[in-house]
Amino acid sequence: MLRYIISISLFIAGCSLMAQTSDKAKDSVAYKDRYGLRVGLDVVLPFYTALSDETKGFEIVGDFRVSNRFYAATELGYRDYSGEEDFYKYSTNGQYIKLGVDYNAYKNWIGMENMIVVGLRYAFSTFDQTVNEYAINADPFIPGRTETESVVYDNLNAQWLELVLGLKVEVLHNVFLGVSFRGNTIISTTDPDNFKNLYVPGFGSVSFNNAGFSFNYTVSYLIPIFKK
View 1: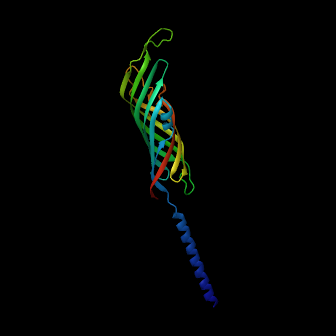
View 2 (view 1 turned 180 degrees about the horizontal axis):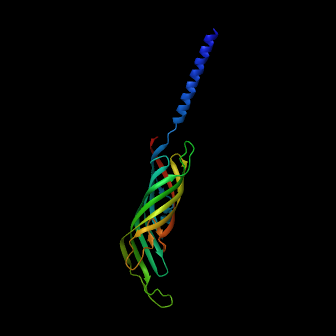
View 3 (view 1 turned 180 degrees about the vertical axis):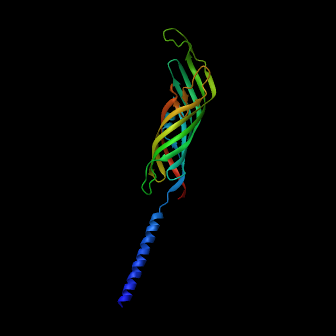
């Protein structure tokens, strides 16, 4: 009798151990990361467009998760900008596209999809630049005259690289708020004759050393496509 009790006890213990092992195996593969397309807009530019006479435009942003930590990313947009320097007034309008990759430096808990973004972009812009008003004599101590006839420089372009640092946080299901800081450097540009590019759409104002900084603030929506 004792032998049967011992046998039954060992059988039950073995079944229990197998069930626990099975449950652990299920737990280890129960959660799958979502992969999909995230699309959105820069939310600051519409306010500039509505409230400012100097800057108008829009920017569409998107990324696609290609591995656990890496995302293919892009931005494309349009800018119309009016500026003024000491001796001339000008305007620039054109479009741009940025292509690159983002790395998520944040290790999420299970079920979270927030990001600390470290990225790189190659960017290209085509645009026109118009000098609306300029002083013939740029010496402030010598009387001169102001010329108001517009001078148009068209078919201009510029290429640059951007280092991206930012955050993306899921605030509602599939809805993300993002902010990023961009450090830019121009790698090539076509300058107009007897002038220079003062503003490049997507890049911003061009400094003497062809470097610049910019920000963007975005709202985007994740369209899940598959899990793995």
